[in-house]
Length: 151
Image (cartoon, rainbow, N blue to C red; front, side):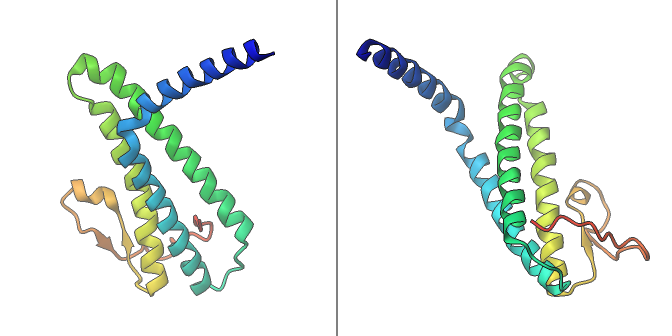
């Protein structure tokens, strides 16, 4: 029995070491993801209160945890792309682009929930940072989306 436990312990130690090496330098990206997810949860709840919607805490936390797992998956995929394409190209362009898009989408959600909570009738688009257009724009008439992300 103790031989089996020793073998299991050694296998788990080796697996843990490989995982910690893989994720060690990704901690800032994972931390940024968690901060954005929690900020989005906070402002999503406040925006829902302004809209006088029913807030179900279990649904909000479930969606927040789903987002957290999604970010872990996206950061993992970005690191895998960095280790494959980044090595051959010399620069991790693919993984940087993935993280730029993913965190841009979450930042859009956070800022738009904040603007809605504050009663500002504008929409913010993160991806206009790379263009020449205004970051804040008036929403188009009749384009109010009732199925927004509230987490």
